Image 1: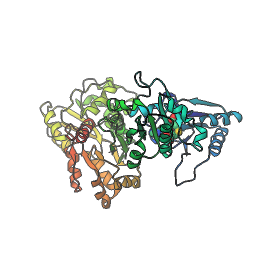
Image 2: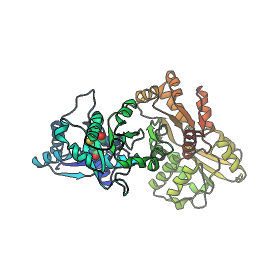
Image 3: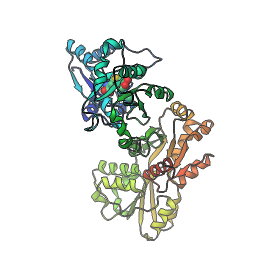
Image 4: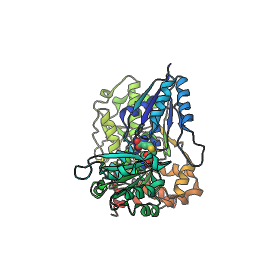
Length: 502
Ligand code: SAH
């Protein structure tokens, strides 16, 4: 097989500011060579077998030179691999993508370039600054601020006269120089300036001032790279157009403890609301397999009058088994379906089934209250569910009619990096920890160990409902808030309210 290289722009940082084409290149890659400015969450989209090579600068480690990077890319491609060279922003905007392309061309290695949203435009947008505007700037100039010999490299006179927006990349270290030179060459010292640090990320920070005072302000605020320096009247629009920093969860790090297979909606919503999801899947769902009992129940499903699904996992495993047995949902004709919670109801809907009953509350006591008047002694109920579920519902329903419980999955400890989370907790980098079930609480405690429980007090613990809250309290921990509606939306609601101070 012939190797190939994709020189790919990964966008300015926000996970979703990447093109479909770039995402395809990540999914297809055998090797991904990436920089510091690439959002590492994107690497989760790669194949399991994909090799990752970090070539970004970091102050402590040896940094690869551009020649060494070129060599790595070319050698991997020569081995017949698909190499995705992932760069922050656009590969041709101060990304040395041109040089990498030339190098590959000289060695007859096939390559393609995938443009990305450059931070020079997208980064400004997320800070509420439009790079052009009919009333304030009819052009823009993107400039490197990383100057070896600035007198030679930049024509300050021209830049000072230019009345479009000036955007400097890699300029933080030279900020004072940039401002002094522009003022010296005649640019109004009151020209607005913004500095945008980690643009489009949850930790985006922006300071504003003018050419005369921005250096002092940036110094005081300890602004570091990577940052964009924006000079021009468009900066004043920030007050009005700053949509990103006004998002409900902006700037907050929220830990998600449920199983990776279930957490995607929560993670996605946190990102959409401007927050930083920290995935720490304390549980892993393991289907009990083989499961003769489940097979028998499905083959004789006509004998049941109700099936109660208690989770999305239950729905998934049950219906996969149905199909494995070469059956489909028509076999469930005449059986009433109960879904506990809207997520379970939605999982059924995805399979073409509208649940007959979705209890208003999702804890066993309320479910029983809703079902008890509907049931008669001749009913037969099937409940396929997790092995460690509470007995209450089964016991109470059995007082009315026949109930068959089948254990279809185990929730086991997730594979997670404990040290990483303890570090984040110790340095107060986690604002909220969300618990969506008692097992997420118990497993988190098991993973970090009782002796580290104190560290959980550095974050606000949010519980999905009363049962989970009781489990949290049983470890002598405080429940900071409990969701009003026992769903992930309920959790996000309560966090958003807390941030607004309600
Ligand atoms: N190819 C990239 C730029 C690479 S040069 C692009 O198109 O965006 C690296 C410089 O880009 C950094 O020093 C910084 O000035 C700027 N930069 C890139 N991403 C940034 C971000 N998310 N926030 C702030 N500055 C960023």
